[in-house]
Image 1 (cartoon, rainbow, N blue to C red):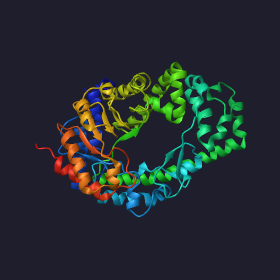
Image 2 (image 1 turned 90 degrees about the vertical axis):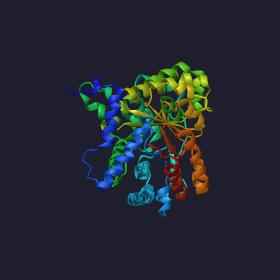
Image 3 (image 1 turned 90 degrees about the horizontal axis):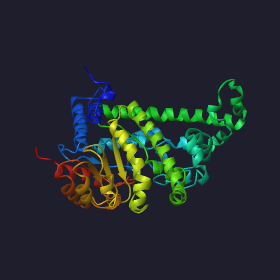
Length: 444
């Protein structure tokens, strides 16, 4: 008798998720070779995630807007023109076949930001020159120091009627709405705020946002279908944030969260518990809906230079660890992108079963990461984006050779850039792939 999902161990759940990835339903591969290539690519990744030796070291490069520039266009253009977006990414994948295909879905539609009046970002043509190569975050205190109780008491209501009006110009009118929990009986008066012209305008804006996202989603879905049929292996993942980063990035801001660690640490810890529960519920629901297996966490404020080791172990790691353990129990693999340096954190974070998590490192010494984590976790990263952008193919290949020699032993290693490459040299990307084949092929 087949077990119910909740009766499976975390390893059995993980194995099922890998099988969904390895054997996707309803895919009509363009040829037997395409099917073979797809399975080889996916199996290679499954092996390294399980901390085993695959056929060779995989290569992963976060490309930023590189495909746009190689196609003679720019980031500004492809953020608004979806046909040019798909054309550029299609050409790139055809010319530079990596183990992960480059997806245009990483370029989010600027028209949606425009419609919402989004205040957390500056993007080309909106706060940045049109020739800019990326998006910039706008630091701010979007939640006030005395609003912790409101967040803790009713986070959904705080988000809708306080936070969203502050970060979306198009939704400033939401401050006039009433909590939905006020609806008990005789609901007509609850909806009186919807008679306000500014509220009605907000609702019209959301309809426009939905229409624009439908266009963007349609072209990306078609791109993914064709790429899958051609034998490329799209990662089945979503994205989340450490609870501390949710509070420290887009709610309190850097200055606010640092102050809170000293002035109201207990209130901060209480709020982290609330954010932790919300994160777990949202991520598991989204991942299960997509039959995915991986969630990426860009770790913004946990690095060596933002907070002390004691602060990390008090404010940052416990809430993040709760999230990770909940995902692992559900068979979901966390991908932890350790931005900055994690040299003083490696022993602290080495708390999970073999093959339970995978790490992507920015500036952490990879030899030390391999020594501490390599027997239990898949590790990747550390190829400098500056080298990929401005170095020579020979330099890139030699750097990769040394990384593979140190980190590739025993498997569980992905050759990867330490951060996103906005204008990469295509010859250097090919040099990374050549290095993986030349120096990273395992003898069977």
